[in-house]
Length: 325
Image (cartoon, rainbow, N blue to C red; front, top):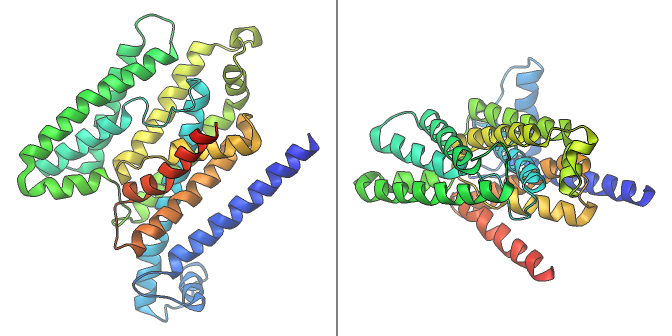
């Protein structure tokens, strides 16, 4: 017990240091390199009431880099926490935040919005909710919620919606490039509103998981939740709906970003075991750190779509984990 606690504190300290380091680099590094003193002056101007000495540095730091770093960290943390809950709840190590078809619904809604000139976030979120409802109707034919049936329903709905996305791309003409770029995810248009949405989503995912972490431990261990006074069906409904809504909020704001919700929980679980309390907290930190690192990499490589970078970073790691098992 003492050894596990020491390991938890060590991993917690390491992930916190990585998160602080990547966040600091995100603010300092870019097309316009800034010294730490310039960033400190901007922060003092906004939090300490001092006059802004460098208008250019103020615009870059306060309006561009800090919102982008917060948006990336929030999105990564939210997806990692949702992935942790999905894997424990569906008893499937390959489950991820997009298992319930949320990504495909958001992608279809976003593609339609770009094609028709409508608000992307609103239509993408509506598409996510619609796909979630379809998966739920297909996967819950009786009062009993079977995880395997839900996963298969998610695959079916995602496949159908993906065909619709392909059709829209064929019909889009000159707008196809904008649709493809949005589908692959990006933080280039981050602002304080988007940062607020992703951070709120990440906190909601963390609190949702922590509120039910003991019940998740019981389900993940194969125990009968009813014998512990837990209504398993109601718990599944509550957690699946909650984490799917969080995922929908992230995807509708940032696009589809894969592998974060799949790889991060795996790595943390290998280090610390299946207990969901510490697993959720460390996945939150790990997801935020990974997304910040991926965003930094995307910026260095000429603003690549963030989904491409997370796939390039997460794919080999996941292949290695599967090979070891």
